[in-house]
Image 1 (cartoon, rainbow, N blue to C red):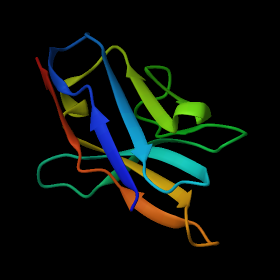
Image 2 (cartoon, one colour):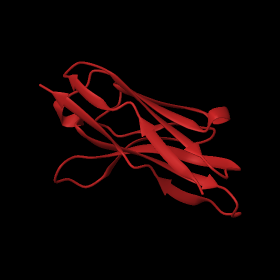
Image 3 (cartoon, rainbow, N blue to C red):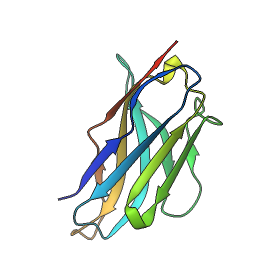
Image 4 (cartoon, helix red, strand yellow):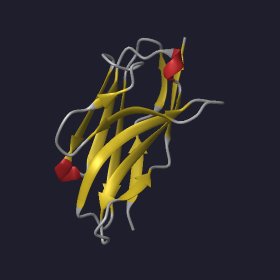
Length: 120
């Protein structure tokens, strides 16, 4: 079975930084797109950033220039460096990945989420 486990959330003041990590484990042959989503209280889950195995990263307009997504394919891990954090960045951040495991087609997986709280 495949699991995604996030870490790195916490409480930070506005203007501060946090780095989130998400490690995939289990029966993994290859990982296609990896991404970070967030869900604020009372709002729908939204895409923050995504990164393919090779190619161009994608960011929500609200985080461009402040957040950087990266991945280490050898470690099956994706990172989200968050700088210049704002109170509106508060939410539960979930890792997401399309993973080829024992099946021959990619399956989509979600992590359990990590809380990010930015105080003003």
